[in-house]
Structure formats: structure tokens, C-alpha cells
Image 1 (cartoon, rainbow, N blue to C red):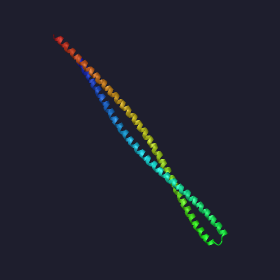
Image 2: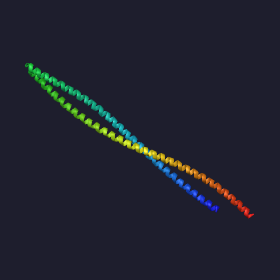
Image 3: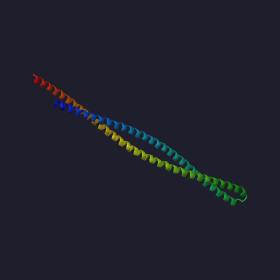
Image 4: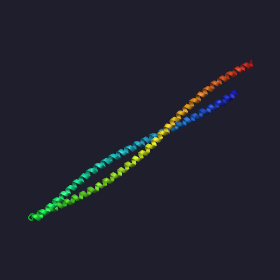
Length: 208
């Protein structure tokens, strides 16, 4: 009976050790998978951060270009106002000075052409400014979308980190359980050795 108990005990201990080993192996596999996912998420997060920085630099350049064009448009507008004032003055001089009519008429035509050219240029600048404003709005929308994606990836990364910590704690618990089982096995071996010694003594007493 003692021999059967011993064999049964050893069999149960082996099953416990096998289960503990399987749990440890599974925990290690999950830990490696989580570490790989963590590295992938960190890399993706870095790529998105670089893309956002590039978009911000592009947006700054667009803002600078928009400011320059706005200043140019204001300057062109001032020039147009000045030319219009000059045209009004020349027309007044035409009415008051008939002698210089032909020369002043040519000057008026020149100023009109220049005014029209400036007006066309101003319209082109305004069209370009509108295009830049549209581009700025598009880039801003893209930056917002990128920031949202970064927030989602960051949340997923934090969730993976929590899962990794949980797995590491479970691995530590399994290791502690394995150590406890090993301690119990050692105690059972000592008990088996003691029982075997007692059986040997009993056999000797029976034989004598």
C-alpha cells in the first residue's frame, strides 16, 4: 500500500509539474507575442509622429507663404489706390490744362493699362491666396486625422502594456506555484525515504 501511495503521489506530482511547465511555456509565448506587438505599436507611433511633424512643417510653410502673399496683395492694393488717385488727378489736370491734353492723354492710357495690369495681378494673387487657404485647411484636417490615429494607437499601446504586465504577474504566480510544488515533492521524497526505511526495519524484524 505504501508503494502504491508512493507511486500515485509521484504520478500526481509529475502531472502537476507537467501542467505547471505547460502554463509557464504558454505564458512565455504570450509574453513574447505581447512584446512583439508592443514594438510594432511603438514603431507605428513613431512613424505617425514623424508624419505629423512633416505636416506641421508644411503647414508652417503654407502659413508663411500665405502671409507673404497677403502682404503682397495689400501692397498691390495700395498701389492700385495710388494709381487711381493719380488717374483722378490727371483727369482733373486735363480739364484745367488743355495745352497738355495730348501728352496727358497718353499718360492716362499708360496709367490705365498699368492699373488694369495691377488689378489682374491682384486678382491672381487673391486666387492664389484662396488656393493656399484651401491647402492650409486640407493640411490642418490631415493633421487632426493623424492626431486622432495617434491617440487610438496610443490607447491600444497602453492596453497592450497592461496585458503584458498582467501576463508577467501571472508568470510570476506560476513560478511561485512551481516552486511550491517542488518543495512539496521534496517533502514527499523525504517521507517516501522515511517510509521505505521503516518498511526495511519492519521486514528485518519480521525475518528475525
